[in-house]
Structures are given as structure tokens and as C-alpha cells.
Length: 239
Ligand code: ADP
Ligand code: UDP
Image 1: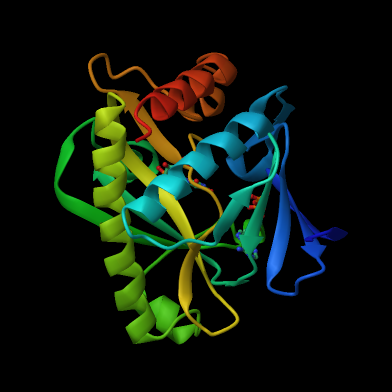
Image 2 (image 1 turned 120 degrees about the vertical axis):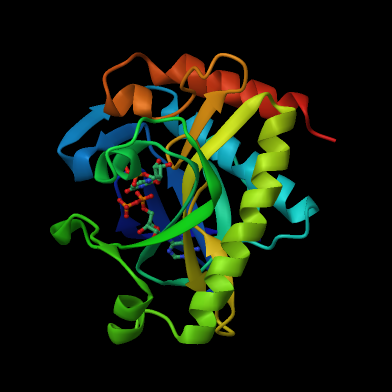
């Protein structure tokens, strides 16, 4: 029987606990939303539950599509078991459509389809505001090897295809998303963290209505009913 141990990390959206298995962590999704690198912060009742359920559903879907992740199983409405990783401090962002910081950086409108998916790396360091970096930075700072960079990009493209297919069935356009990877006990690169409306831009396929955290970031409305709608649609397409 797996049992919950001590709190080892408290982040902006989740708490990580040790377990009696050194390769397994117990995650609790919190009712907290943050933006602007933590400057904007609010308690939002129901958010932890929704993100846990959405992330679990997406990782299960990816598993069926042959894509491995750290996800072991959902324990309760707000808790999961995951494989413990040594995290690579990178936010791997893939963009299918212009939005957010990309649209701003290049002076583009949001919502323009890109000719091909664009993968970007951001160095995960709150104190530096997660700076935008390239492969040479990743190599220089020894965040990953050249082989691992190639593997990260390939995995991200494959995950994009699986997510596009899944969200399309749910009537959702996948604009962009952020992934995090870690190395497991054997040194193998594995998809980790979460995939949820906090970490993806999801637009309704027919109306382009925002079904993601931009509602919170931009003070456009309440995220809870919208995250509920994303979960409802993902549940409805389950095989
Ligand atoms: P943040 O740290 O950005 O505030 P969270 O509140 O989501 O974000 O915290 C979760 C933390 O757990 C993140 O730092 C993330 O990199 C880390 N993490 C995600 N998956 C795993 C894993 N499988 N093993 C170890 N750490 C993980
Ligand atoms: N993203 C994320 N965590 C971050 C920054 C971005 O999950 O700390 C996600 C975000 O939800 C979006 C994608 O990464 O799906 C690209 O975000 P962008 O660089 O446009 O940043 P933003 O406009 O959110 O600052």
C-alpha cells in the first residue's frame, strides 16, 4: 500500500509529498491561481479539483496514444500519484497559432495559424522571470545534452499531434501549450508536471471563445465554469 509522507515542495499550483516508495510522489492540486509570475494570486474554489481531473484525463488519453508520462493514477478529486523525476528546468512551449507573449514579441495579432509548429524554450527560474532561451543556452548551462534536446523536441511534436486530435474531437482548437520534462531514476526523459487549461491555450473551435487561464490572466471572467466545460467535453470523448 502506498502511503503519503512529508511535504517536499509547495509550488504555485500544487504540493508534492514523498511516499513510502522513493520513486513515487503524491501530488495535491491546490485551489490557487497565479499569473504574472506570482504577482497576481487568488484562491479559486474548485480549481484544484478541475485541474487534477483534466490533467489525469489528458495523461490517460496520451497513454492510450502510446505517449508515456509521469502519471501513475488519480487518487481522489484533488490528488494524483506520479513517478518522481529530476526535473529539467525548462518550459518547453509549442505554438500552433499566434497568441500571448509570441504575438506581442513579433507585433502580430492573436489567432494566426503558424505555417508549422514552433517550439520555444524558457529557462524555469522565477527570480529571472523565466527568460526565453535557445538550444545554445540549454547546452551552455548544461540543462540538457544535444541528444536530449532532440528528444524533447520530437516528444513535444508527437504530444502536439496527440493533443490536437484529442481536443479537435472535443470541439477545441489547441493554440499553444507548455510542457515540462524530467529524468526518471533510470535517466530516461519523461513528460511530467501537468497539462491543463492553466498550461494550454484552448479556444472553442467554432466561436474562438477562450477556454483557458487567459480569462484569469486578462480579467475576462470566471475560470471555473469554463474549466468545467473543458472537463465535460474531454469526458464526453472518452473511449
Ligand atoms: P511552480 O513550481 O511553477 O510554482 P507547481 O505549483 O505546479 O509550479 O509545482 C509543481 C512542481 O513540481 C514544479 O516545480 C514542477 O517542475 C515539479 N514537478 C512536476 N512533475 C514532477 C515530477 N514527476 N517529479 C518531480 N517534480 C515534478
Ligand atoms: N505557460 C505556462 N506557464 C508559464 C508560461 C506560459 O503554462 O509560466 C503556457 C501558457 O499557458 C501558454 C503557453 O505556455 O499556453 C505560452 O505562453 P506565453 O509564452 O504566450 O506566455 P504568456 O502570454 O502566458 O505570458
